[in-house]
Length: 272
Ligand code: PT1
Image (cartoon, rainbow, N blue to C red):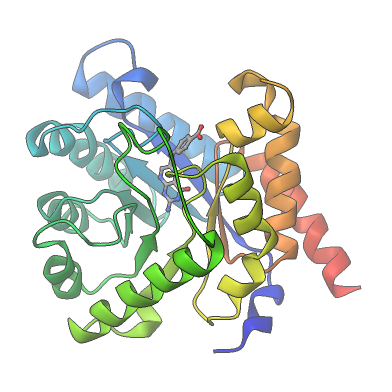
C-alpha cells in the first residue's frame, strides 16, 4: 500500500452520466438510453476510463427517489451501454437492489455517496464482489448544505472513512476492493472543501485509491464570485490537475477530453 504508486500513471478519468430528470427534460426511456449511449461513445473517444451512471441526484437540495424510479432510470441504460462497448461502468447508488441489478446488467464498480450505510447495502456490496467507492457525506442531499459543522473536517472525514473500511472488512470485503472519497460539496462549506483538498495527501497516504469529484461544483462557482455552472470549466480543470498532482487515483468529471489533457500534462511534469 504505497502512497507513491498513484503518481506512476495519470489518474483514471471517470466520465459522469446523469440519468436524473434535470439532465433529460423529455420523456421516453428508449430515447434516453439512445442519447446516453451516444454520450458514452463520445466520452470513450475523449479518453474516459470509467463511466459513472447515477439515477438519484445527490446535489444540494435534491430529494430522495424511490427504488422503482432509480431502477427504471439506470438499468436500461447500463444494459444499452454494455451492449455497445466494454467500458467499465460504475453505478452511483446507495440502494442494495440497484447495486444488484446494475452489476447483473454489467456494472463493475459501486459508487456509494452514503458509504454502504443504507440497510442491506454492506451485505449486498460484499456479496457482489466488485470494487466499491466509499464517500463521506454529512447529512442528506436535501438538507446537507443548511449548516455543515466540523471541529476538524480532515480528521473527522478520515475517521469516518476508516470506520467504514473496518465495517467493510468485517463484512468480508477485501481492502483491495475499496476506494475512498472525501465527498466534496456533501455537507461542507467552501472552507471545509478547501481544507479537504489541501490535505488530500492524508487520504492518499492511507494507501487506498482516492476518488475526487469537484467538476462544476458550487465551491468553484463561489470561489470565482458566483460563477454560473456553465462557466466553471477552467476552475474544474485547475482542481482536476491539483487532484492529480496530490495523488488522486480517479477524477470524476463532466468534461472528459479537457480533463484527460490536464492530467496527462500533470503526469508529464510529475515524471520529469
Ligand atoms: C462525488 C460525487 C459522486 N458527486 C462520488 N460520487 C456527485 N464518489 C455525485 C455542488 O456543490 O464527489 N464523489 N456522485 C454530485 N454531487 C454534487 C454535490 C453535485 C455538490 C454538485 C454539488 O454544486
